[in-house]
Image (cartoon, rainbow, N blue to C red; front, side, top):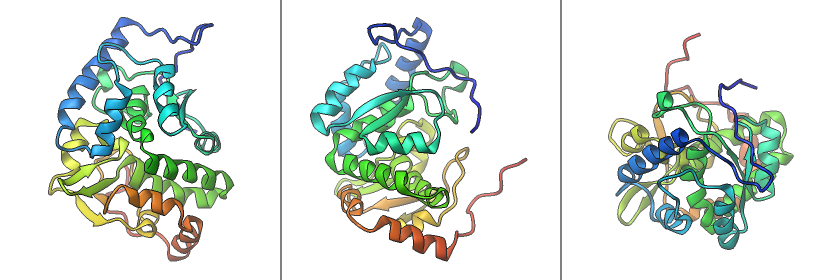
Length: 261
């Protein structure tokens, strides 16, 4: 596993996590900026989730506040984790309807981008859509499949996750919109993903699994769902059969240069 400079904050005896004012200020900067950027770009289901969560602007929310909303809407919870967790832990959590949230926030020096998922990415990027039953069902199914998958199969599942939950787009009657949390928590990628610069392909889970990606660049390709309900339908299809087909067919040529050593 990779190392990280960040340390997740521990709760006190009552379960309350204390953050310094400087970290609340980072949250405030991130959420006020990003709420403006996603206007007219985020899908309605995500915006509905933002409204349900009622995220505070002036402070980092407590996980218990998020849990109250998620449990009432879809039976999900968030689970406090360190900055980075193994694949096994990740799948175990999703399979039990718990979404991992690292209880640290990025430094002002890494305001625009950091490789580790922090509390802003997890709560602002992902938790709003966990109020949606279609999205929640797919995420739960994904966790159960990952738990039973081999190490090699998990790599193909990871690409499906990346191209949907992290970096997915969706067509709507109002136009193309964003639902992927990796995009929605990044001001630069929010604008870039809907521009003419990257390639857009109609969603195909098999193609997602065969498409290499890099985590440290703007994505050269985004897959576009016909509607968000497509994720719910996919949850009831033979995803592991698709994994086997993707493994047999092999990967596409990367659409990006190799990472410098």
